[in-house]
Image 1 (cartoon, rainbow, N blue to C red):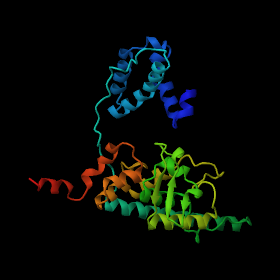
Image 2: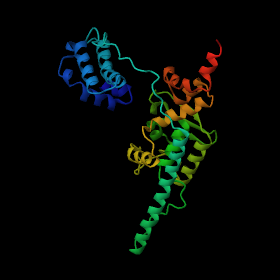
Image 3: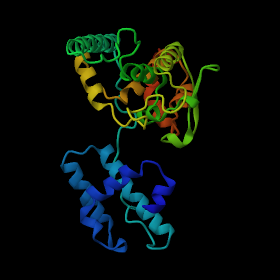
Image 4: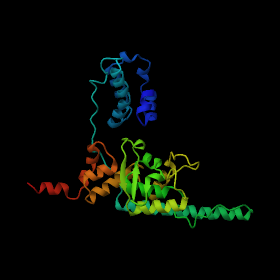
Length: 299
């Protein structure tokens, strides 16, 4: 783990997986663990309802341990050598918003803000009655909190949630209209640059004018530290919008899907999303307008 923490991001998740899903082998010497031991663990996961993709991901956590052990001479071969990954649908189901769902999401965002303004006015009336200092009115604020601008930016840039949480003002260039995702803050450790469309540019401009911040995180927590969670606000927003089966990460799929459906080349989509494996981008290929129809017409 000291080596892994020094060389890889996301070590917390890997450590959690190792500590919680490999109890049956953790007490063994590393040279006594067999492929059969790991197969039994994998089978138990499947029987408990884990999907093949989840099983592969969990097993990948310990795969690195055995690879390092071989590299450093503790064992000659990895017990995973003959344990093939489970087959999964590499394209999978891409969840994106229908036009009606998109409208409902934006309507819910606005309704949420209207409700927050009314609640603040009501609270201030109560405070004034009791001769207490009123809180700042939200009536003149473009955004009542961080949720609406975060959603708008994600839908229009395809940023991963962690990348959005890590975004700092120094990486937002209003002159060139370029948003930079710094390499050491990304899943792939590669820097990428995203051209801001009008919605992204306007949203960030209004948000900066409102927050009066030009340094630090674009969306900080209350103590100006890194924001860690929006689960509750996001869940309630989806309930209000009557949208089911749509995760925060699916906004990234929605961004890519809309690009492809409007004719954007897959290579461009790959660059914008920061995919290192083109197979990830190919999940959206079927959405290209008349792509398969044009191919069929050739014969």
